[in-house]
Amino acid sequence: MKNWWLQILFAAVVFGLFWPSVAIADASGGFIYPVGDGSKPSLWSASQVWDNLSQSANDIGYYDIQPFCTNSHAGLDLNSNDGADCGDPIWAVADGEVVDSTYYPDAGGWGNIVRIRHQVPGEGDVYSLYAHLSEIWVSYGQQVVRGQQIGKLGTTGNSTSCHLHFGMLTENTRGEGYPGSCSTSSLYEDPADFIDSHPIERFIYDYNAVTCANEPTHNASWYYSCSEKRIFQEGDDIWVLLRLENVMVDHRFKAKIYHNGTFQQEVVTDPSDVTDMVNGWQYAHFWPKVLNASAGQWRFDFYLITRDSDSDGVYIGSRSATVINGYSYSGSAMTCAGPISGSAATNWVYTCQNPKTVFERGETVYGFISIDNVFVNHRFRVETYLDGSYQWQWTTGWSDVGGQMWGHNYFWPTANDMAMGNWVFRFYIDVNDGTGFTFLDSVGFVRAAANVPYSYDGNIHTCKGPITGGAETGWVYTCANPTNYINAGESIYAFIRVDDITADHRWKIHAFKNYEFQWTWQTDWSDVGFWGWDRAYFQALLSNAEHGTWKFDIYIDTGDGFQFLDASEEVFVN
Image (cartoon, rainbow, N blue to C red):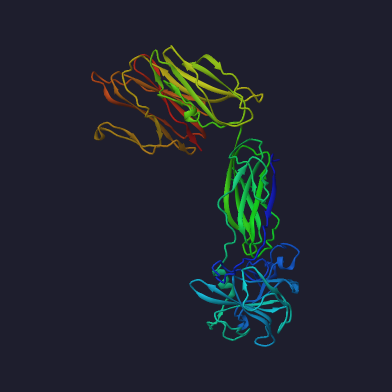
């Protein structure tokens, strides 16, 4: 059973309705359909109806029962189920001026008719026609705005049942219902094509979705907000708040929720009816919630479903949240010669100065490790090993995060007057959950003689090969295709170089998988002669690699026994 579940909350608010004091006939704001919620009616089939958005007939959805030019019909005939739409409101499709508002018993049998002139910038005037109305609510010369009710749907004139005949014309004339030439006449526009090519902005989304530490609440203006949070602790509840503005269409919200890239749940809200066809809704809010979130990466993909969208709706945007298990660790373990620097001036970010892995007698060795996004009280421990043998350990006191989140915490043990040889710091953490100390990471270093007969610049790396070089390259060798990611069954090289080496030498490698020792291999002695060599290379091949995390420690012996030189980065075998 999953240890989380989803709860969906939804809030949307309608703000004050008003008619503008100065009517504007310019229709640059776009066009809507004259019935229902202003969205495009379904075509013919009753199976295409919106999923019973509510019990109101005009909200169930309209059908285009006789599309443009069908049977030479110069408009759209729009109605709902079984004539249940009688008396429904009829909306002005755009801002404009009423040029006709009366009853016509003839001229196509329009009955009660309204015609509105719309000024379309760059295109000129276009006229919308609404016929068979049961009531007319506007008068000649009146300025109207998009979404304003201009009458009620009816069956006056030459009509057998309640419906709206809706037309779009290029001239100031009533035209005819069945002119016989609607497809060739420049007088008649296809209303659906015209509206679809002059749409309104149906909502505004400014990428404001946020992840929240608490359930969103609203102010006196019904504007919802929350305490934003991006990093969560395992077991926390996560809210994600989405806000749309100037919403002009009935809708549902949908969220698809993923955990570490794997789909978990799809959630759809109940329908919301935007009843104000003039102003729409100032805000619509939606906040899905994940309870008792498990560790990992959570992603919320948001969609808006409308009557004229498909079932998936219109993609709006995404928001992600990271859930960690008390803290996160990014592989920061290292050694350095110091000092450790950091303060309020660096926002309490500390760094280990002069990083190195080979130390001479008298130098102080700093071990250094950091954890991030810390929610839990904790303490650190370091264990030290010399040539594989345990030496000593040290444990810090408890760090109390005080119920807050610390961005970082650091631990830097030091060692002085260390014996010559190959050392390892192993770091642990205890989060006071009853399980004790948990291994975090390890880092190796060498306490070498004061002067080594070579120089080394930290060039160790892993690669797929091939390794090429010879006399033609001046004895410079390179390993092609450097990487630390391979697939199981593939092979990878560990490759390293020392410069200006003046001593005979031999190499050794230790291989680890998932931090457990696997195997070792060493070379024979190389004789550099009297003058020494400019460069000496070592390569070791891991063939037919098994799945896991691999790491290679490289040693060199110049006559005083094998000394640790460097360790490769982790190699991930998928």
